[in-house]
Image (tube, rainbow over all chains, first blue to last red; front, side, top):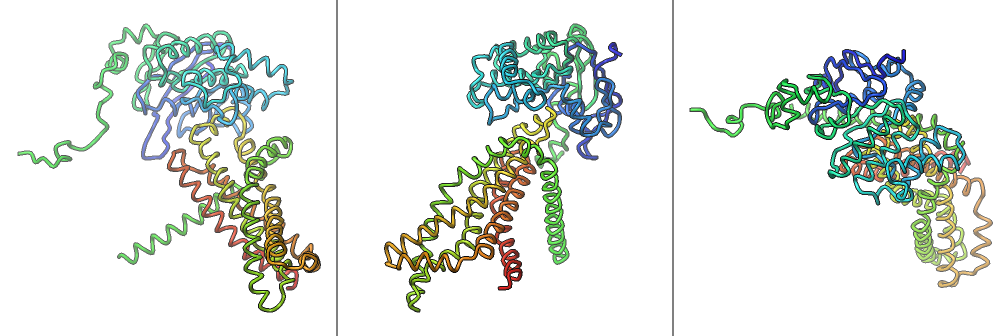
Amino acid sequence: MSDAPLVEIQDLSFGYSSARQILSDVTLSVPRGKVVALMGGSGCGKTTLLRLIGGQVRPDRGYVKVAGEVIHELDQAGLYRMRRRMGMLFQFGALFTDMSVFENIAFQMREHTDLPEDAIRDLVLMKLNAVGLRGAAELMPSELSGGMARRVALARAVALDPMLVMYDEPFAGLDPISLGVVGQLIRRSNDALGATSVVVTHDVQQSLHIVDYVYLMADGRIVAQGTPDEMRASTHPTVHQFIHGEADGPVAFHYPAGDYAAALGIMHG
Amino acid sequence: MAERGSIATVGAFTLGAIRRLGQATLFLGQVLRHSGTSLTRPALTVREIYFAGALSLIIIMVSGLFVGMVLALQGYDTLQTYGSEEKLGVLVALSLVRELGPVVSALLFASRAGSAITAEIGLMKATEQIVAMDMMAVHPVARVVAPRFWGAVLSMPLLAALFSAMGIFGAYIVGVRLLGVDVGAFWAQMQAAVDFEQDILNGVIKSAVFGVGIAAVATFEGFDAPPTAEGVSRATTRTVVHSSLLVLALDLVLTGFMMRMWGE
């Protein structure tokens, strides 16, 4: 059982409405202890896939299995039991703005454990020290820079030592130093906690440095997969376009639209 | 054809309003089901009583004072015509305790605290704090909504009582101190005429019902707000408009019910 992947996704399809399919027949697995990246351009369904893993939405077809349990078959209590073993870093941090940094990290400890205040204090300071922000414990989220907020959110995501940590665009909007720091923290916390991590990102260079395996998504499908070295060496057109940041290619520059000349009212002679 | 279009528009509007009312009712049920946390951890509710109630004290007290003063001025003018100035205390006290206290304080509360509750919950939703909490296996309705709901419900009768008290004090200043109404008559007639059950208790019941209405509208609008700046702003406006109308409508129903019940 321990050799089975922690996350198994089979033939998963999902759309917020019947008219627009977000994910189509996605199949992938995330081995235990690994850091796996879900890469792809904006709007390709990466974040939706995280929401399906976390049970925030139900699939139209297929399933997501975490630790052997099919997520959409769990009732509310079962889903909450599962989520206590998951951590999630949101794209914009989603820190509780009415609580200090310390209280943000302590939140889940207070909600889910009966730990005495002294133990909570020690644990929170350890988590904050791991992201280098022990000195910022008493600050409010509004007093943090973008990079600091992301590190606090990271500390909060791993506050209860989860088995699975999901990162939604952890590198978005960070300066180069913060980018490297957050990348290293993701890798380090995964290895130190013995956790499994899923990183949703479109930051190619940063993520290829820290992940063990990559799934590349386009238009709601997995179009390529492999280790970072395999991805770098790939001649697959979509992989090549994505890794090298080319504006046009299999992933079209233009959103589907009618004839340009007709839209401008230019008659073809 | 145009007629059919306008009928369809009215129909769609009506169906939309009924659907939304149904959603709000289901949401209220959900809040009540998840109210256990607010009882087992009173500190959460006390914090919201501070934000909704204590921080509304200034506006409620100052407004109550002014309303009482104006009532005294207007009442004195009319009563004087009939030589009944000593009835001023009764007029002011009954007006405030039965109607103006609960209704005006509820309208002020909807504008001051209801809008704040909607904006706060709406912004928490827009900044993914609500979904983050849900992902941490903490039910947002239990942790965020229910304490705010009960905080508002418990604050409302206290604020209405303070409004009435300040109003009576304002009337005393204007009536007794400035216009020369006899102080003994002012208080004694008031004491004799104001009934605990028919007047004070009914006022408290009214304000408690208004509190439930405002809290339900404010929390529902916040929780249901589209997670955008425009969505939160519209939801906040809707809270003030809908809860104010709800207070006035409930007041009519409650007043009719209470008058029939007490045989007046």
